[in-house]
Image 1 (cartoon, rainbow, N blue to C red):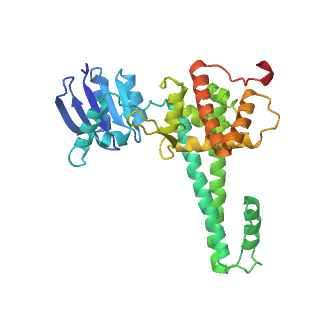
Image 2: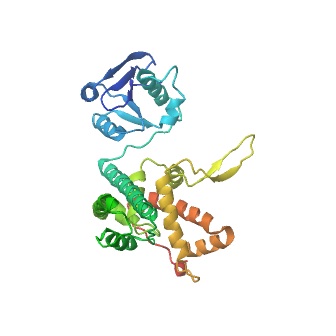
Image 3: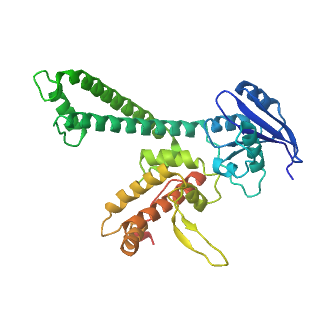
Length: 345
């Protein structure tokens, strides 16, 4: 039996649907209000379970509700979908969120602190500018290739060739197109400078955060991976153990069991945290590619044996799995990472 009322929020930019259910499961109200009114209601309401889907601004509203003493539950939209009855409307969505929040065994997402969300925002901005820079690079190369001008790979080659093509004496490109090429090149240079500024801001923030400093001592973990790990795991209090953290990232085998028979398959490539998993895999690959034939630590010896037995790709997944579990231990205990040397055993 729920001992407090449930408030289900269907978040949006201008209008937020708020559904209230009492502790007996009876509907109290279900109406649309403004974000300003919602702040007032959260401040005045009795201690309640405040549930919402994991979507834009959910962490902001989660932090605000928690500040007023509410029990905040952020639920995956896929899990809420199963409780939707009738057509998709804001009112039905808010009611479905309330019903999902009451289910036994339902898993909820942790609320990100402002610090962790800042890291996440900088990372998403970095990825956006990286994609835009790649798109501009490909467009400029295709632009010139249509007129027989091929540019070798690399930023240096692109820069040197653009200077030559934009020269007034170069007649390989029609004069009517040089002005538009100049615009594209200026846009490319501006995007590149903006990307560097975002990367500098993120690296500065990572270096200031004590948990990230400790995470970067792990093999294959640099500023990018450290920031993503800290953003995802936080202080690790939301996870019971390292395995749960690894499941959250998506680095454990899938299970399909029935009738007492257990079948384990590969990792779920569609679930978990895909960007973090990809970054961890690349970090693990860099570690394995630089392994010496004579291991110095217990982990290096384990990796060498694993590569011989299972291959490089599976060894990368295994190392990424171990990295997440170790990161959970570092974040939960506050200890520093020290690799175990072979001569210590």
